[in-house]
Image (cartoon, rainbow, N blue to C red; front, side, top):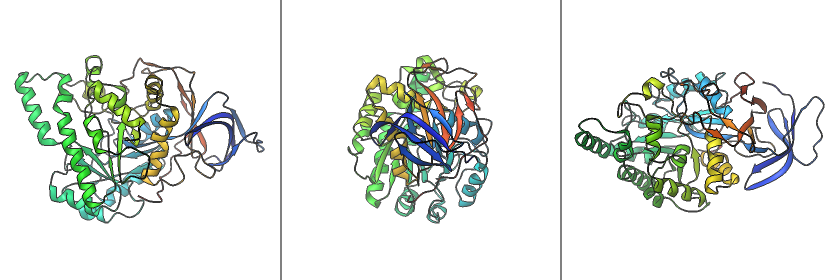
Length: 446
């Protein structure tokens, strides 16, 4: 890893609710100094960022990079390359791989896989089942970024549908609990009804009706009630409905129960099924414009704390299967920041809010050490954005292993100019510049 000093001058630093025009000096991987008219050390690379935003790198707390066992869809190397091309400098990967990450030994093996392969910084979740409470209880500080509970349809034995197991996890987990909230019996009932109605040929725009508001609310309210009962630290992932917003508090005070929304649920609504079909099929489903606007409102009023991607690649052949056989999931890490900046213009979401929800709040919720802010002494995980640039998504510049994106053909009116991971410039103008620079995330609490 390079130790060359880098001086970024004249940048518009977006950090902690403010935009300031300042210089920033990077030394030995960390932010050495922030201020006006910093002198360049001998041998330093000087980058003039006049007119460009400099943001803390995004920390994506929900990705599926598919390794081990599902690498025909994606892998830690390919998907982390796409991440840094999108300004995502740290990621937290989910346990639904093969084999599922249900033991501390398998968790350790995932860290071994990522070392030397991840272009962004990384952490991994422990999965939960009806049977692995002993493994969860034995987790040591910093060993997992959280425990993931699939309180809805999933694959294999990652679905926790036993109430005694749920009670035990919420009571005894030593780390943050994160939940996927959908009610499986409601989904199954809705799917059978749709098959009868359409003689087995269920149209794709029935997806949000099958994975309905009722199925989401029943499960997410159950998670909130369990966390309230046991005093658990709970983070509810990828919320999709207006109704669920009533479960979460407004305000910026310390919360034991926090809420997340994903980029695609902010950007798309059910009108997108007619244009994009299975390319926007995901779980929980993208729902109505009313739900979409309620999520945006909740984000702006601090009812929703974090924005993530739930990046979930599948091959194009898999996605082209007829509904409901087509798998759910969308690849998003490469274009999430660009999509959020576009949403910001469209819905009056300040860039300071975007930074807060994609970096600051993630660092605080998970207790990540020395990342998520632009502060002296912190690791230099940074992304430079040209807000007057232009970026067209096409097959040639998509870095995902799966090779497709729901944004293909779309022109964004800003672009990612550079990304820095641990003080090294790793991406510039469409090119990955270095071998993997990612480090294991450290936690001072979780």
